[in-house]
Length: 101
Image (tube, one colour):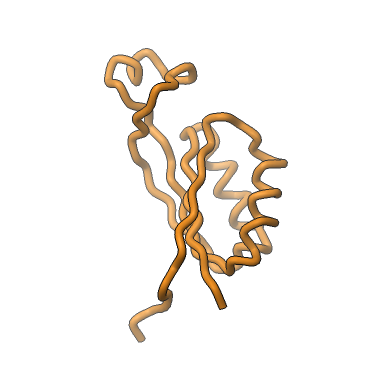
């Protein structure tokens, strides 16, 4: 089975809603990891004054490994629920995935 890692970067204001959505998402099934990061880019239209001064915005990153065939339906569901210009995603092929037991 071919696996894909999906990473989502979203404004912190959406992070809780997106996490709840992913927890209930059938295509995901195996959970995800979330952490906070700093986004750097040209579009600061949604940035607070503090973020504009610092030159970066706080973002939440959510990443999950899923079967490749589940990616398109998951992205369609995410687009239907969270259509926003400040939600970014990228994918990467996963060569191996498992635990150390």
